[in-house]
Amino acid sequence: MRWQSGRRSSNIEDQRGRRISSRAKGGGIGILLLALVGMYFGIDPSVVLNVGEQINSGLTTETSSYHPSAEENRLADFVAVVLGDTEDTWRAEFQRRGATYREPTLVLFSGAVQSACGYAQAAVGPFYCPGDGKVYIDLSFYHDLKSNLNAPGDFAQAYVIAHEVGHHIQNLLGISDKVHAARQTLSGKEYNQLSVQLELQADCLSGVWANHADRARQVIEPGDIDEALNAASQIGDDRLQQQSRGYVTPDSFTHGTSAQRARWFKRGYSSGDMDSCNTFTAEAL
Image (cartoon, rainbow, N blue to C red; front, side, top):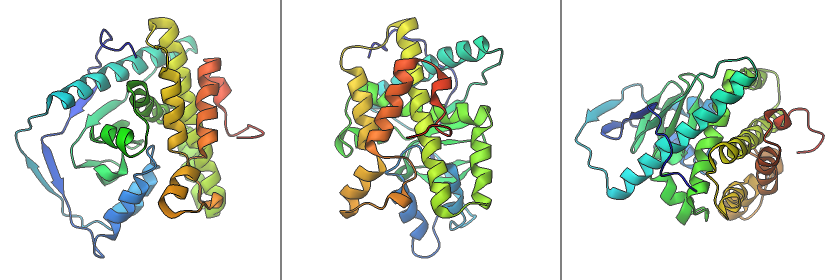
């Protein structure tokens, strides 16, 4: 990915020197659930809220000097460029549609963070919180993405950010509110299906970003799209469940299968049109 000459976003909030700790009730069950959910980056913020109810209200915050490594500095710079590029893409797209794009803030944290969606440890992976309109990421996730999820490459890393920004787009358009409101009237199985549609739409929107970014700024190099498709497929519900427990339960899927995630990213990238990303009316996912 050609990113070094890109514009750096100023919407970065660096909290890596802030240490937040809490003790979970029930012998750490809340933290365990967060760790399990963390395998599925792009977490539904309501999961953080539900788990947060198991966390003691008393949080301890300490500020200390933080000395990032050279690799962390490079990743932070990379994140700022990718975020800036999503801003350029979606600002232009919203303007074309007669609307104004409200840019999200991206929070860098280390270990744990307190968001409007609750307290979360790094184990949850990157997530978007609609309550404060912020994307949260612990840069150590990129090591996990490469080493544990078999998804190396800078464009795979960019896809992670673009996916979370996709959730921000859904929030701005009111889609997220409708999905979360439906939780009150649907069965668990039915709501899981809506969650899959929400996640696949975010994958598609990340593909739309890749299309626009490359046409406008020529950021994509040979092999980059394959990196994104590989990352999407590596985090499918079916693959992760098979790896973690040896079998899959489709009714519990919340993010879509490997094939679905890769297919919807590719659909967004091929079309470059956010209207092609309506997973909620698609005859087949």
